[in-house]
Length: 209
Image (cartoon, rainbow, N blue to C red):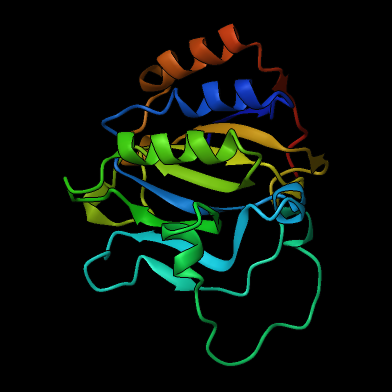
């Protein structure tokens, strides 16, 4: 499957500009962002209080209790909290604190109540405050299968080891298209040109044999 890899820009303003390139007519967003340690230390985070936006928002709670930790500790092995975790809703509503994390579960898919533009605005505001994580944005769904997407956009603050490549991949942005599901590089040209204007550095990797 053809992919274009780019190095994640360090500058938060450039990260926001990357998020703003997501087309308004794309179908849905998956992923999560966690608050940074710095905001915890400043007392700006409503601890264990997650904003959860789902395709099935009508049957899922939007504000939930969660065993969250700062982004910097998100992949560390640790003992998880047991039992029911109560969200600090009053910290959000009355004290103006920020969610400890944001989780998007195919958010905006097949609904006009929550749009891609709404989600982009949320992501811009939270990434602008230093939140980090991983996101996948899908252009559409072939035969309504949520895993069969013509084009995808990946936005990942974590470094990772890809199944398809030998090297460790640094924090990255990826554009991907699947011709079997109707995906075309031409449909990504506007995003590609925007990445060039932002100054994203394209990454090259050796495919695993």
